[in-house]
Image (cartoon, helix red, strand yellow):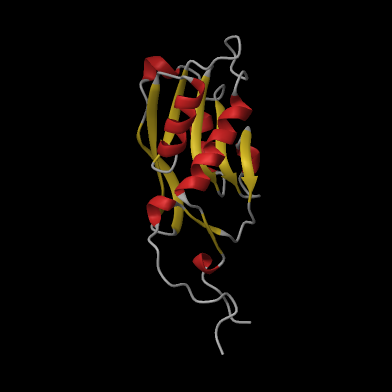
Length: 167
């Protein structure tokens, strides 16, 4: 068998599946906040964490929403993450009572960086890969490290070559 590109072992996530998984994550987080089970705020790690954070905020009735922008990819190539936009400082403190959400933890480098800034925050993600899953306090689905997840905001319907090729 020939070498495959990272995207050739793909896991396609539809809008419907993402919505179901984000709701499942919300249900796992319900009542787990430090303030009688409530969370003070939710912070989405942009860009992938925006949609899950919005769904979770709705499900858990969290009205205070902010973002942290971390750049750790150029297209499908990973590089050391850097914060390019921080959330509101007076909201965050050390992260106590803050729910930080992303779509995926891959290598764990993004969450590791954000955790150094907000060590008492709770980190949640829908999908987790083995190298990074210890950085997530809560997640829904684990996928193999060599799987590339295609999120609905990154895809369009088109023909895909069979995994083992064609005759």
